[in-house]
Length: 149
Image (cartoon, rainbow, N blue to C red; front, side, top):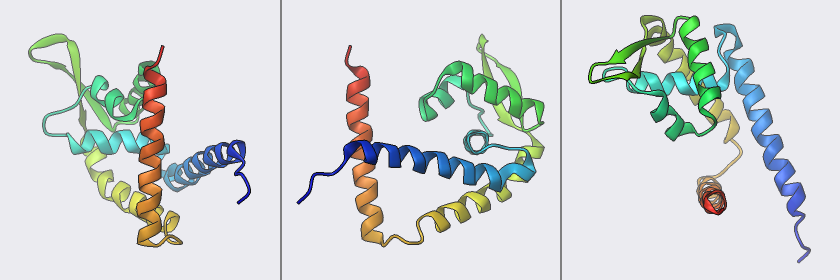
């Protein structure tokens, strides 16, 4: 069996990520949301009763705190998120979904479901299970590499 071109696999993974984000961005553009803003907003919506923090979002999504803070700020400016001081800690701020966000939730759920259905339409359940297993294996390997000095 011929050796696989690992560089090409990496390039393909990168292209998949870019194209998925572009497609999601186009699907969400009329709501003036980007794909990552929609993901963050859905996370905040799922915790709308108790609120959530920027730290919790960082732990869930990764990325830099500065970039996440900027995205949350844009969501706030667009009227999707409100910020409140934490009762027990003045330094900590909690993020809550606004009524505008709650009215958008059904659209976000429907849109992300349609994106998933279209993206994975050509895969069998067995192929999806294999893809899931291999992605988790790669993420685990990356986590180990990141932890090394």
